[in-house]
Length: 269
Image: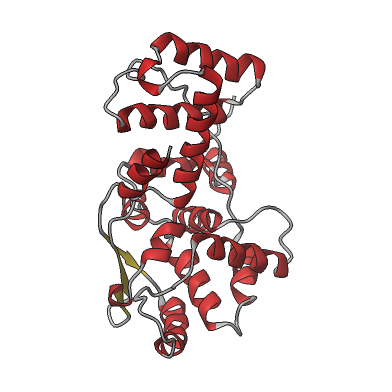
């Protein structure tokens, strides 16, 4: 298990992925009671049945577990899980904020330069939480209003556009950041857990009662840009989606646009 964690970390998996996959692997090996190289495809199928019939896992949970186990066998050069079929995850609409809610959330941190800059980068840049935590000071180009996201998901760099209020929030944060005595060159020298706490606290202070995460802000940006008429291909580039098909989920969330389109095209039987 220690070696498996080292392999995952060497592949630069997120801390959450390392923790999840390690848990899945440990539980599986305890259940099957065999060394890894003695496990058969039939053992894996039996374990899948156990997850569904005995532990009553949802499709999402089965999906995550089997992805983790496939990674486990692949990491040690074993083909045991190659034929293992991973169930399709149910398509769910993304959770997002209204523009008014997003505005309230951003304004809660007006007196805290780091948190304010962080929220603006998430809310207007649409970065993943891991991407925000890995931004380097050299990745910030305020003059051209862009951030360089290095080796995001899929190991691809991309340029992310930011707007004036985000630039201003960063101008207020950078002098504070410069005074911090640290060998860390990141723009925000914090963990993903810290970012999640900042977002959760800001949502509470804004009076938003439902769950809000950094990814909620990413969904909010994409939904708002699409609602305001930005071409979906540009939204794809901003978010760093490998395929526009991933971005198309946001076309299903704007019910007002759907109503307008239906009213314009409704039949007159």
